[in-house]
Image (cartoon, rainbow over all chains, first blue to last red; front, side, top):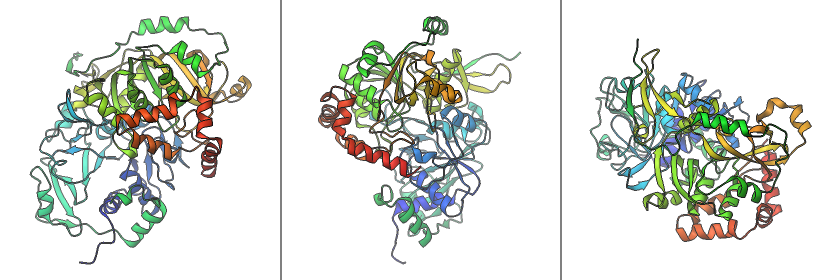
Length: 258
Length: 327
């Protein structure tokens, strides 16, 4: 195998970016989703409409935003409104994809970004939902980006900050969440995962270059669905890496973290 | 007929149940005359922020944030504050200064620089009580309900989550359709701080770029302090009245605060001051570090003017140039 000329953060950004089709609406949060959206706009999706929670709609992502309300989230944008308008736009079904992260995820794509340990006496108090719960509740399809290990991929999250498929098929509809919405893909440093249509449990779709199915199983704290055929992720192209390094994050704020 | 049935109730407490009748009475007595409200930040904070107040700020830490007013609250040591937290730097500084008692939280963190060490210390030690958890949308919608003058608003967020269980929301079946919705109680705060691009002496205020939740919060506060990059004559406001999102009668005090959002940014005016934001992220990792930062940037200056001199005009001018260049 040829030596790897990219790091795992760069790989995750490229994989996430390829999931963003042209001319769709994408709810973008801080971090990797911002880089992925910028990369998609510069390569295969020039008419991608990034939407940021504090009001930016359709920004041209020339420079990397460092915050979900900063100028680059509405620079050369189509509209600059406010948080109620954005969340209501999602409620009305206008936002196709939503990107999320978290400290823990379970087999149904439920996410925790609130506490580690007991809620009342937390071992670690994390920042809280922020816009995550709204994104995971209201967008049609959510894409989760996370590091892959047994501490993060757990059978049961300490706290459901953001609902995935909750306890299985029909659960989202039963609690009143919008019909036909829910987690769609999980992008990690090891693999690309999806969710089984019938059971709504997480399913391996593709492993990244140099990663085996066994590596993924060993780093997951619950039983994954492993289909007969597992694809291989295409490594980042020269063009993806060049744009990412030279145009999107030349200071290496994110991609230098490896 | 369909029943209006409560399906689920969050276990979080409400810091202040919404009293919409009292809010109407309160708003009735606010002056409707065009009164000059321009004053110093010292006067505004000392007159309109009290110990124990329920306080909210807009937008947040690194973006169009009333940082000069926040620093003045810390200098005046207004304590036992209850806050609604969607916050980055501003709430972090209040937490680190030990002035917060309770918080209704949605997100307190440092975005690109990760979790908030000040929040972790305050909550994990039990010094600050998290009375409820919400989503960002939920907090904004609660202000919206207050702005509408109604006691609650139905939304489709938070359903099925522990965020709902830890909030004070209630899930009901809609009496028209049977659809389950989360009812969020209106959030009326004692005092709100909002930083804007321009305002006149009476408090008519205009914002450029995204409006965050300024529209809703301005209408959900009993007292409202506006800080503005620029104080303009009322004729200027009257020329583009469509841009006024906060009319004067909502406002109690107007403070002239150029670079009032520093080290955060102000769109079209100046960029964020990355070095100082990073300095906070690093120094706030320890209690001593946080204290030293507060000493250096808050306690050791008497007012915003001295703060700006300490930061240095050359440095501030560079932030202006940076914003100008990317327009």
